[in-house]
Length: 373
Image (cartoon, rainbow, N blue to C red; front, side):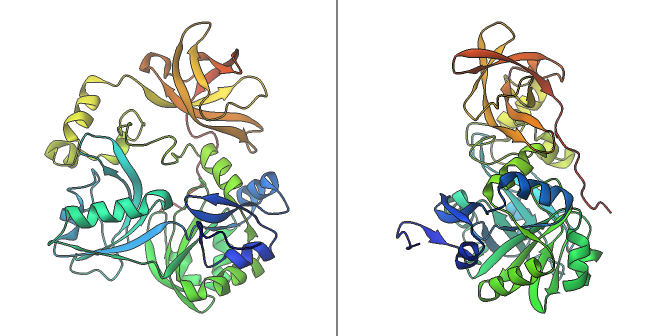
């Protein structure tokens, strides 16, 4: 397969081809959508065993400066000052109008005694804008250094910990949303106990020149290679947002059902971008809410499907949808008016102009199985 000049390639590109990966363009990168075993088998391999994902297209960076946690709190609504060394926080990069520019992971490195450094991981499609935005907003006060010479692998599933025990035993000391430097298969890595499947597992930041070696070691230890298709069905079952689909610059955290990212202190300080809109939404309510949706038939409701009141008018749209292999049926997420947001509410999905019955359900569709402390 010849290189397409418009696409970027992760360090694992040749390995994906060797493994039979079917490559597609995603966020400007050539990425595997599936391998020969297929999306269903890959999904099940992750839910039952351990799946290996190439997420090297994501953006990694260090942000450094005095009181860097206080500085980044001028851009995100989370409690970053409260992070202890080795702790990770999921947060949102906020637009001035209260919309969401991206969601991201913020880690305080385990060796950061003086509070001057944070490790950031942002979405692939947004990384150039995100990093430019952060660097510009904090210019003169903090320095953002892109880590483009690092790859990122995710190892996810109930057997991930046992698999890591043989290659990097120190990784088993981590609990959900903590990170530490760990040698994995003799390779110095930054390992976080996190991921986007709802399962226990790890995200492993590794120097680019050793990424293939690490991936081969994880595969040899029993991990199955997993493509973007199963990554999407896994995160949808876990009720997790995909940026650019379920959240974007037009949505605020309250309508997106992400109010939990705003702790009490930040609500009281009201000093993050878009605070006026976000706090008004908290106080006065929203006009739409992200919910889980279960079509009552077998037809999947794809992104863009119109949501209507049961037997009535159109009220919203499906933002993510497909087949949930663990749920053994179609599942979706989307936005509905608050009076329709209660689990059990009957709605219609307009598929090819025909109303199909569905109901609003609580998220997630499959229980999370994180390694909590």
